Length: 220
Ligand SMILES: *[C@@H]1O[C@H](CO)[C@@H](O)[C@H](O)[C@H]1NC(C)=O
Image (cartoon, protein in one colour):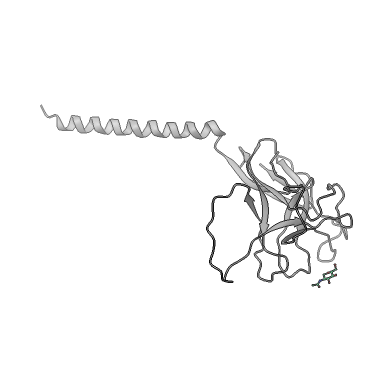
């Protein structure tokens, strides 16, 4: 009687069994959270996410480059409120600098529909997961989504001021923008101004001179 091939076959079947079992377990783990798909995006101006099937990954504050620095980074980041411990850096000037963001929105330039009282307050943000979705996009110029898309939030397009030294990027800031706290001071850093239209190369109609630019974040 030759036992070796039988033993090898038995080991082979066992290994396949273990492999299949582990994979089934992994698939089960994924599907208990949600159906396995989802897209992440940042909601500028709010502490929490409230899309129809959206969870808050974390709450944070907006960070970025200083409005008066010519080499400032342009992109905004959403810094979580529970950072891990970081080590001090050596005294030297070969670094980039990150600041918090403030709303530069007062009675003089406040877009209709935005809450008042946020002037010079520090801007909140939240990282969001739209569950079961495959794509998310910002649509500037609208506050409603196209057919078949779900509205995550809508707001006003904001950026740094046109004649400040630092370049900036557009952010869709929630129409109900809130501060991280009520006690923030006027310290400057990253500054959010409402964006205003200038007709010419920008075609009017459909756009209009000197208006706000609506925005909406949609998922599908
Ligand atoms: C930017 O524009 C404002 C008017 O809104 C003006 O008062 C200010 O001097 C300008 N700043 C620079 C650096 O040109």
